[in-house]
Length: 188
Image (tube, rainbow, N blue to C red):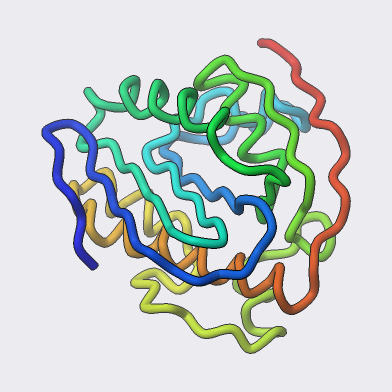
């Protein structure tokens, strides 16, 4: 995996033939869930540190190189969203939407949910569909990715996000998606 290093943001671009219509988005975050809430406020304390997407032609991943660069990643995300091809898919659409609402200040609804049912884990979906791990250093454990990013092991965190995108592509390919409910954006 080759990354293009910028002073503040690591960027990975990889050509790929995915044969999907639209864009799959997967983000990695740091912080704690606000367990007092069961709506978008649950993600109000999370900060996006990696933005990844895959479409029919390529994978793109942007990773903040430290806490001081999270705002720049938010700005890049905001700019990219309008350039990506719809429909938008995510494994847990309300997670991405809620993080962006509280962290970036944008309201984005997704078009397709890749979870087979609410609270399905990606690890179980991957096992059920016999999808490979794609060299995921954390085997679908997002908490380990958070810890790697906090320890400045950015290449490991990027490798995890890349693997997540490929797994989600396969989930979409093998079983499709469900329709998503509109996210309920609630301010703190």
